[in-house]
Length: 438
Image 1 (spheres, helix red, strand yellow):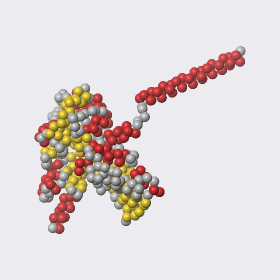
Image 2 (cartoon, rainbow, N blue to C red):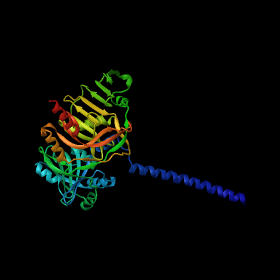
Image 3 (tube, rainbow, N blue to C red):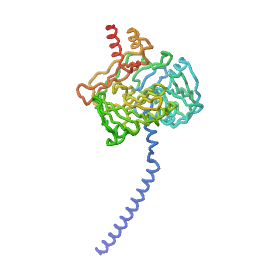
Image 4 (cartoon, rainbow, N blue to C red):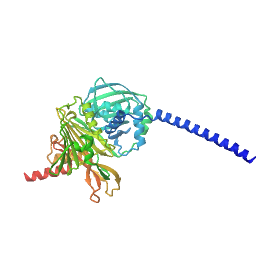
């Protein structure tokens, strides 16, 4: 009887095991089917479009309250930003129309009560907005913009503003839950008060009162220059390597390309003088070419943003950003600087340093003067408006004196002159010295 029970138990166990295996296989199949439906493998093009969308995304979120007060939200929660951006993605945009406008009209739109503003540091093609938010906005011809104003006052309007060209593209917006979006926008942190003012024929962001920004500290990650060499030129055994003082030059004579490693600035400069190169005619294609160059390196671009374009997109700068503000002196020209000549030759400079893990900073917040105070300082020093192009708050990249492996991001006012960017204090100090020498 005991053996008979064991026999039946054995059969039962074997049968149960078979059933368990069958169920496991079926469930595994369902999991793979489900994964295939919901988590498709991204193609190279999709990954590149996503990376491009990150680099060319807005750097600051500005909310205009119901009373007209405006604030930059430097520390919004990810959920807040995602809710607003998801609402833009789900909304329907139609009837795009581009018109020339006056600075007064642009100032009025940018100061519109109950609105959410996405700010870009320089003009970008609307195709980047379309890619990021899944739109097909077209006003009959390509247009560029550096501010997008989402009206949340039930007017069902959106405005793409190009303050460089004084153009406004108006769109009709539907399928937007305006009350819910406004409720979320109204909860964004009011970190820094701002206004929009007319200056030198353009509408510019202004800081009406003095404001404080924290000092941030990070460990520095330094990339190996040889990774750029292998990614852009090929294997080392195909190249000639020479020294020019402290600089190391890697040359690929077959395709007229070379890389120069400068240890003093900790940069590498890539030059491509291939006769087959051609300068793209359209602005968007010049930006795309610059991004494609960066994308070859597969860099970590988490903190890198498009910053500035000059000469119609022949000079393009990308910078590291900290809490919505650009970083200066990471290298001579920016985190990444790309130049395209008229015949299509390319010159790209990359900083080998990137910010890594944040570390505690024991430095007090820095109080910066208002825009008006800075303008007065420049005026009193005899600086004409024609002597410079732009002024803006930003962060200086300064080596941490307590640790050479760390860097401090110190807030300051920056000024752009024909010779490049420098801090306003350094610019005025140098001007004062030169005046004494004269």
